[in-house]
Length: 227
Ligand SMILES: Nc1ncnc2c1ncn2[C@@H]1O[C@H](COP(=O)(O)OP(=O)(O)O)[C@@H](O)[C@H]1O
Ligand SMILES: [Mg+2]
Image 1 (tube, rainbow, N blue to C red):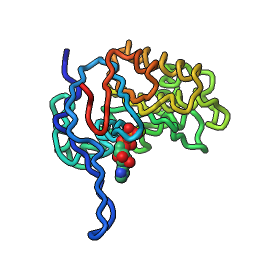
Image 2 (cartoon, rainbow, N blue to C red):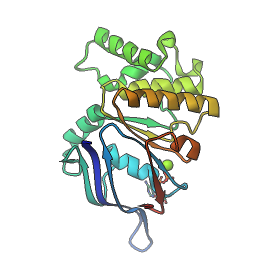
Image 3 (spheres, helix red, strand yellow):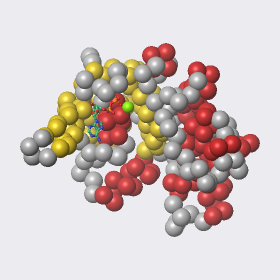
């Protein structure tokens, strides 16, 4: 199996306060892991154990304090701002618990956001957004605004937005956390479908029943992976 993500002794420290009153939180205390291309991995563990911190570093949204993060053998920590922005936009799709859709945009325009305005013509933006929305089962609600959609449907729009540039990797941080069980399972079914189509998926959840549906579970505890 081709290696996709490798982390070696990843440490993440958050420092706050001033010189007199220093506050250091070690969110990750030396995480080492390897994820193969095409795997579906669930990350689980108690609130505050570092799951989101880990996922944010994987997605290039945050940088580690020390240790090495390799994406298909390339050091993400060594990328300059421009390369990192490109990595986030092209190589990774990210889905959040809270969807983060723009209220004033309909489903098509929300899904098209990562395409940018400069390089992709309007007609092509719409075509690709509609294709992504069809892929997540929302072909019938292309012009709906977030307020007109259920939570599960809003998360589908967010997933369409995440996959519009055809990234190889989808990172999802508690993607079902705001949904009831039935809608949560529908989002899981969609992740399974994307996985079958070849995507590498890393999903954070504290729902063990959902975690159990992945190929592999990574348990975290207090900034470390449990063996
Ligand atoms: N931006 C931040 N500044 C300071 N501390 C943070 C920040 N983000 C997270 N933390 C701390 O790092 C630890 C891990 O947080 P997080 O990765 O969000 O955990 P989880 O997602 O597993 O609930 C927690 O103690 C949290 O309070
Ligand atoms: Mg979290």
